[in-house]
Amino acid sequence: MTKPIKIVPSLLAADFSNLAAEIKKVESAGCDWIHIDVMDGHFVPNLTVGPFIVKAIRKITKLPLDTHLMIENPEKHIPSFVEAGSDSVTIHAEACHGNLKEVLKLIRSHNTRAGVSLKPASPLSMIDSVLNEADLVLLMTVNPGFGGQAFMPEVLPKISELRKKFSGDIEVDGGINRLTSKETIKAGANVLVAGTAIFGAPDAAQAIREMRNT
Ligand code: DX5
Ligand code: ZN
Image (tube, rainbow, N blue to C red):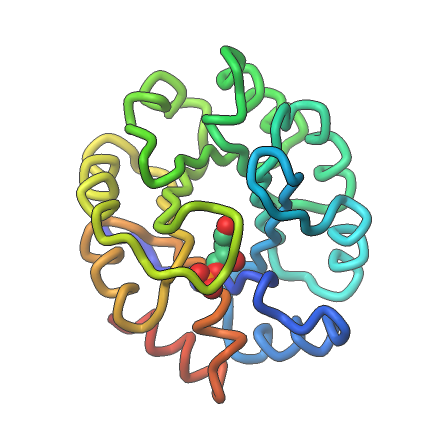
């Protein structure tokens, strides 16, 4: 059974001085969820936004908010991101130190969808034992930290491998555009995050359509 494809704009590539208009733009362009990248300057070298901004975004859209935590010790901050209005919270397996299963359970205990993410170089064996606790697996197709990087095709076999054993959402993030979307869908991904390819496109609706209809 093939899952419907979801296209999820990453706000990292949006104009933050005009965030409400940017969100309305992708909403009317037909996107499915909104992806919010949270970076702490430790797990990744960059710093972005916290729960305060998620709460502000919650007020201006009804679309599901897909929060991607690229932070160390995510368990400390899960309640604030849930209260701010996240519909799914995704943590990195590499940022949990022996408590990955507990952290996923903690997310679900808030009636929020739980996601686990892997960097391109991290093997699936890091999450094999927690797949039952995850609604979503986010396979990074660039090294996390910055938008606008080139897609890493070496992640494709990991997507196919995961699809054999996981029936939940498989999300890909990093360098996704109308060309790379095809390969990831073919490999088994059904949720496609894209920043530059959507916010940088002259016509966001067309960009979304092209990624969906592959
Ligand atoms: C990178 C972030 C991505 C990023 C994707 O660490 O997780 O969500 O914004 O941006 P593009 O689509 O430009 O590669
Ligand atoms: Zn992301």
